[in-house]
Amino acid sequence: MCAWGTSKAIRVIRRNHPAIADGWHEVYVDECLAEYVQKMNDLGIVTLSCCCGHGRSNPNVLVAIRAKPLMKKHEYEYEKYCGICYSVDNYYALIHYPYGKTQEESEQS
Ligand SMILES: [Zn+2]
Image 1: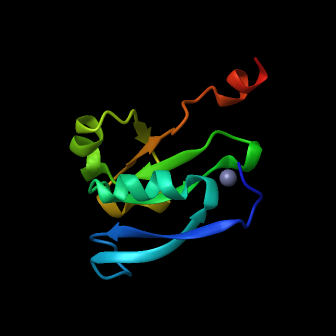
Image 2: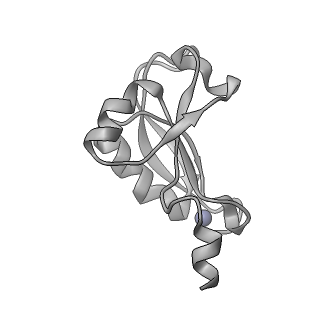
Image 3: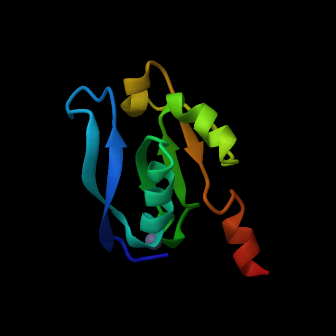
């Protein structure tokens, strides 16, 4: 977990984004998730955003709906995520929890 504002540049895939040309783009993400999210993109998975939660919530990665087959192939767990901000892929995105949804509980034990 890193402090808010601690970010690191990675290269991510952008496709069919209304404001961004298709291809690889540099973005800044929470440092502690940087390698993790870079690996997903290197596998071809289009990620939309990520947040490590900064100790307040579960780390999560939003993933483009079209990446579902790759998520399955590489055994990433995911759930549907209904967020109008991420509706560039028609209607919904996927949300992936890098360390599961019960991180707070497991840290306490
Ligand atoms: Zn962090």
